[in-house]
Image (tube, rainbow, N blue to C red; front, side, top):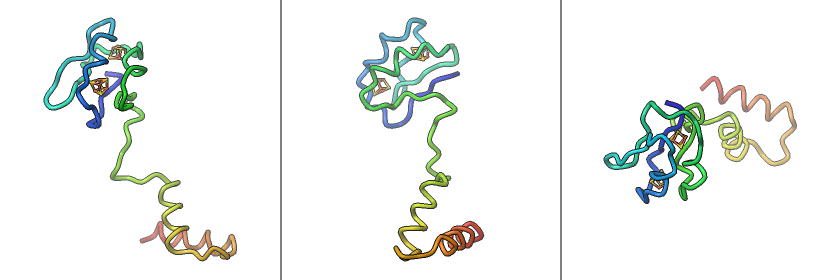
Length: 97
Ligand code: SF4
Ligand code: SF4
């Protein structure tokens, strides 16, 4: 399987007829792509929810990216006038928690 449908799918059905090999079907509760998908990507363009993504790009909400983590740390724990070395130390401390 190359592309997958995320749970943000609103079941509009627009993708269904786009797939030339009929790899998309109505699932419960959302639409699903089976393992015959060969990455034509026609379905991706029509999805109003951007719910069709490559399996390598599926967001993992349990593991915040470094950017999200750094943004959280900088906004919550470091004063605006902090020196660069203080910011670095705060990031290191956060990563050790
Ligand atoms: S990526 Fe291509 S083959 Fe896969 S489900 Fe979408 S249209 Fe079909
Ligand atoms: S086009 Fe997107 S929102 Fe609509 S059924 Fe397909 S995956 Fe779900």
